[in-house]
Image 1 (cartoon, rainbow, N blue to C red):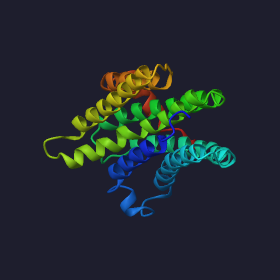
Image 2 (cartoon, helix red, strand yellow):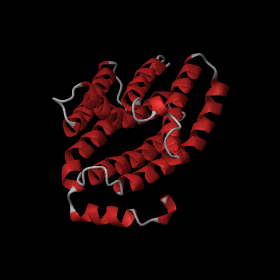
Image 3 (cartoon, rainbow, N blue to C red):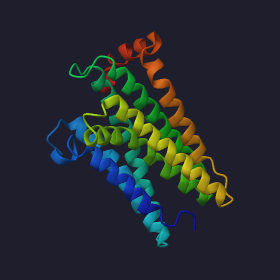
Image 4 (cartoon, rainbow, N blue to C red):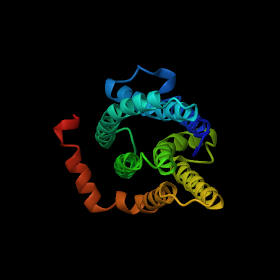
Length: 231
């Protein structure tokens, strides 16, 4: 059975996400506005659903695995929609340094798009368990840069500022992808999930500075905040 103990690694990722967002979300859950709470809860439930699905299939509970999968698919548009709303709110947040919202919005929009791609590929490979489990597990990596950035900046302050922590979080994800690729190659396996995730993380990491200061992206962000659908 591919990735029989994947739920343990997913739990480690969940722990990192909780640690990163503990002061700003988990420690005061429900104290913020509805939109932030909805996004935080839906993102957390997504990871929890993946942990549960991994455990269920490892213990041969296929019927419940499918039921949780349907629940996760219902959750997906809530997660993506609330994420897009958070991007809009961040772009008009005057408490952030002016250069930061365009940069983080580039990362977030790319991540939400890539999330949909991974899930689509995962569903297309549902009859190929080895590919399916890797593609679905790869979605958890998208939550690590925002969580680890906050965690690194908090743990290593004042030596590490926010931008250094952001770069460090991407390097962590890139190294994790590389290690997973090597592990697959050593096992004689070739799957798309980890090379694709490494390509995504590396591309966003390399491009975020240039894109965030480009007039094309800045024009897009100015248009995006006028959309009433996320207001």
